Image (cartoon, rainbow, N blue to C red; front, side):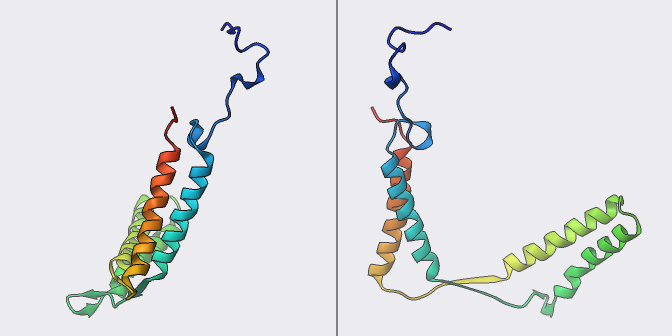
Length: 138
């Protein structure tokens, strides 16, 4: 690998890199990141999450979802290398996780149109600035 004459003795041959390893704007990146974080925080503060009962054909089904997990744990205590035990334990944990997620109810609390526009503009503008800072500047 031969060195070019312009690189010898020229400490500024390697330009400092910006965001994403490109010669983009590092200041734009941090300004956009701050805007996106601020807008996302304000937006998420307006969200209320609650949960309801686990219903299956009108009956509470949480206990039913524990059966594969408990059988799997029992099999693993009997034989720690049991593939069926690991399968039932992982499947039971997945059923419980999915049950929690599917029974969530998410509400956007009432707020003024101005506040909503500020939150969305901060979030979208911040994402746009971060994306622009990752482009190579000509």
